[in-house]
Image (cartoon, rainbow, N blue to C red):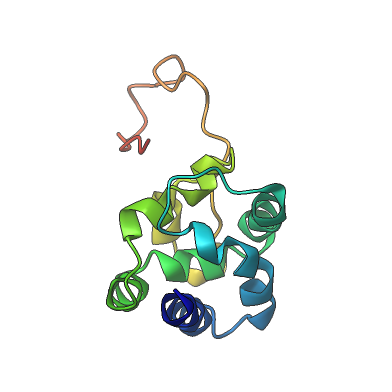
Amino acid sequence: MLRALCMTAFVVMVACQDSNNCLNKLSPCLNYLNGTDDPPDSCCEPLKSVIESDAKCLCSLVSNKGTRQAEQAGIDINEAQKLPARCGHHVNPLSCLTTDDTMSLSFNIPADPVKHYNSSTPNLILIQ
């Protein structure tokens, strides 16, 4: 367990190398990356802060390079990507496909996206 935690910390640190503060904020979440248990507020509140203020770090975690490193460390990427939802935060990972200058995460997905659909807008994949 300690080895997995250390490897997880390493993966997060590599993915967030430009932001040590991001790593420090997300450290309470390390034990919840592979599980399905609801994380405590000590994980969810810092995660919300990172979603709002340091999208670049979270985007690097879901990038191809970050995903490969996480999988090598034994992290189930599918479960790790569900962590924001388990905290009640809806993150659209497709928002990470923007340029570095405009990178931000959209986490205010409408409760009923079909109602807000406009045929003139591009189709997006709804990730649940």
